[in-house]
Image: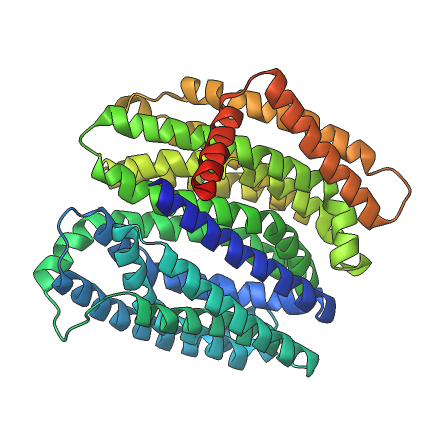
Length: 477
C-alpha cells in the first residue's frame, strides 16, 4: 500500500506540476474569456464522461473475482456508451451554444467531445491497474500525455489559435495517455461481451454511477449558473481561482482515493483494519493538506500577480475560498471510500442525494438573495464543511470510527494551519516585489508550522521523519 501510494503521489504531483506550469504559460498568452468558454464545454463533456468512467470501472476494482472476460465485456459496453453520448453531444452543440449565447463554440465543442471514445479504453485500463495497485504505469502514461499535449497547446496558442489551444491540449492529453498505457498494461480485449457478468457488475456500479453523476452535476452547477448569469470572463476568473487549489487537492486526494479503495476492499471483512487505514489516512492527509491550503490562501495575491500577471487578480478571492473548501476533501474521500470498500454503495448514494439537495438549496439562496459570483463560490465552502459530518456518520456503525473521533484527529492540524495562515497573510502586506514576498511567506509558513508541530509533538511529524530516516538508510545501504 505504501509503495502504491508513493507512485500515485508521484504521478499526481508530477502530472499536476507539469500541468500547473503549462497552464501558467497558456494563461499569460490567453484571456479569461478563453478559459471561461473551455470551462463551459468541459462541464458537458465531464457529465457525459461519468457514464463512461464511473460505475463499471469501480465495480471492477471492488469485485473480488474479475476475469479477462469481465474486462472485455466492460470495455465494449463502455465504447458503446461513449459513441452514443458523443452523437448526443454532437447534435446538442448548437443548442448549448445558443442557450449561452456563444455561437463560436459549436465546432470546438464537437472536437473536444471526441475524448469520450479513448476514455472508454482508459477506464478499463485504470481499473486493472488499480486492482493490481501498479500505479507506476499511470505515472508514465499521464506524464507522457500532459507533456505532449502541453507542448501542442502552447504552439497553437503562440500561433494565435485562442480557444483551439485549450481544446487541442485537453483532447491530446487523454489520447496520448491512453496510447502509452496500451503498451504498458497487460489487458487482453477480446471480441466477447458477457451480458450476465455485465449485469452483476452493474448491480453494484449503478449506485456509484448515479452518485458520481449527482456529484458532477452539483460541482459543475455553479459554473453553469455563472456562465448564464454573468459572462465567460467571470467564469474564467472563477474557474482559474478554483484550479489553483484544485491542482494540489487532485494530486493528494487522487492518490489517496486510488490506493484506499483496493486496499480497504481487500480487508473489508476486518473492520478493525479498515478503521486503522482510515485513521492513518485522515490524520496524515490532514496534516499535509491543511497547511498547504492555508499557505496557498495566504500567498494567493502575490502568486497570481507574479505567475499570471495582474490581469488575473480578480481570481484571488476564489482561490482563498476554494483553499478552505478543498482542504477537507481527503476527509471526505477516506469516509466515502470506506463505505464503498464495505460494499455499501446504497449508503453512498443516499449520502450523495442528501448533500446535493442541501447544496442546491444553498445555491438557490445565493443566486436570488445575494446576486454575486463570490456568494456562489461560498456555498461550496459551507456545504463542504457540513458534508464532513454527513459522510462520517455511517462509519460509526460500519467500521466503528465516529465523527467525534475524526474531529479530534484533525482539529490540531486545522488550528495550527489557521495560525500559520494569519501570519502568512500579515507578511503579504509588506511593500516589496511579489517574488520576495512569496519567498518570505513560504519560508515563514513552513517554519511556523513545523515548529508548532514539534512543540505539540504531533504524531504525523514523527511518522514522516521516521519514513524519511528509513528511506535514507535504505538508499545509503
